[in-house]
Amino acid sequence: MFAQKDFDKILWSSHAALVRGEDSVVRAQLAGTPLLWTLYPQAEQGHLTKMRAFEALYGEHFADAKARESWAALELELNSGAREVRAWSAWRDHMEHNRLAAQSWRRYLFGLEPQSARIVRACS
Image (cartoon, rainbow, N blue to C red):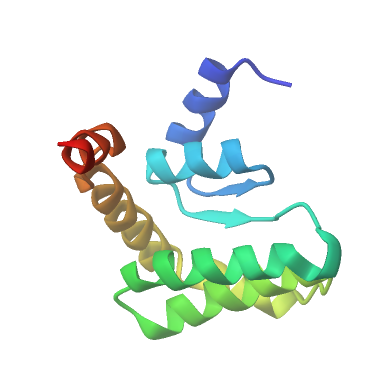
């Protein structure tokens, strides 16, 4: 286990991240690091629903369709128990597009209105 500050340093210096929990995936997104999220399995494949919802939003930030497809295919394999070497290779071969998508997603997240401002406006 790492202290959070040490984990963040590793994320910020990594070329890519394979993360597991929700806290880690949020930290990787905020770091703008290309990521693969291996969700904790849930009853009735609930984790795949969560994965697809994330894929729909994050995937919009890929400028290259093949890069997006390779990322989504590997996410599905990692979260459904399959292990295909070619899926890893395809994802790796699009690393520059993965990096650009991660940075685009990060800019999008930091451009969102803070939740506190939305609550204040709703209560006004």
